[in-house]
Length: 599
Image (cartoon, rainbow, N blue to C red):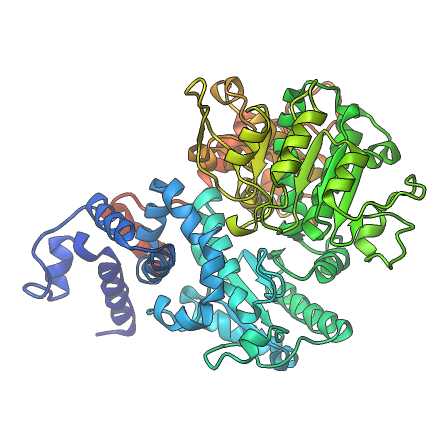
């Protein structure tokens, strides 16, 4: 048989293997499988039913995670059908909160969750940096059809969720995040690249763990870190000029440093800083509309001053400046921060980290608040936002006092830390302590709450970044802006607030129902692309022409509204990848386009 014939047969065999029990009789005959596999020929729906039953039969969430990771390696198409058709059940397994538990155990479970993969991404050590072009070429050669990635999520594992320095074990985060990019926004699964910079760890737990898979050395100093990280990023952009880089879970200083160094010269963003700010702003806009007081009268107290907290606050300031025409200095004066040492002030007596300086108070006189309770009494906030990773930081006393301080308005309480064992409070606690008046959003999922007096079921809002980062990713991949601006991110926040339907608004909800997340992602992507074209940053002529000839009618051409036209939205939807819904579609696409492992 010719080389072409061999290749085609190998492709057919691989397609057949991926089709599994849905393999048609003709293909079984061609592959000489008669009598070697069960005779029943199923459709994809039965495969999915079986997989979902197996998933739900697993006794623990970690075992469910392991099952799904193995399924992803064996059958990409079935995995994403399961995710899309059972999103509410599966998303908390492949990402927060379960991914945190998976990361803690990553070195122990790694060999058993990727049975069909020689590599799931790049694991780059300091020793690899001088030969980074070879590492990239190795990755390219490992991919079927040598398809270049369109997006990478990159971490060094130094600050994973609220769990601290996990080293190489943090690889679970880029993998999980990219699965959400695919499921929610329809990026091509074969063009996603998870990367962990295995530069060491300062965790004695992992350095002493005989099964730890990462480099056994302390983390490098800042100069060595930035030099190595910059070499890796430069090489990635050299190899893949249109690549979108999403920075994830770096230590606070490095998160801000990398973003500052790269955001204006390459296509990148930091989800912890910009994505968190974006999604919380979307919910905050809805909360301010329902709070019952003028926006300029809001007094906002943040507990936690890391990269996420500061990123969120800067996005909220942008909202007050752009939307309500409040001068920046006045808008900034609406915000107070509490960190581990108390309220952040310019005269507190310690050297503030650079990212905290912007929010340090200068109007406190001799007053120094050393606890959340003291800050609460001093600030008398209308909104309390937690990104502290301190479990139960918003205790009954704090929540009750927030209710007492806001008798003429509904208190806004956003405990945003995750996973759930790091959350500042639960939805039930916030409801009970505020006489069910709270405007609530959390970073992790909480159960519904039934109001005892009325029987009304209230659904907690979850300010999860997965509402926004997939849309930012798809928008950037499609229209290829030279860089991502704050106003593009702001347009996504506005579009998120605008995406609430009539029923959700009537129920007073702050975010769309999670069941609609793929449709919402398409709308947010359309808003991102429209804003990027308006700013003249887009390199893709196709999108320039579509948006410029279908620009939404706006009273103020300079306003950032998050609006878009049906034509742009329709074009986005046609380009969103989706798993094949039938075996016939799967076989045709696999043989036509190649790379059946990623179709």
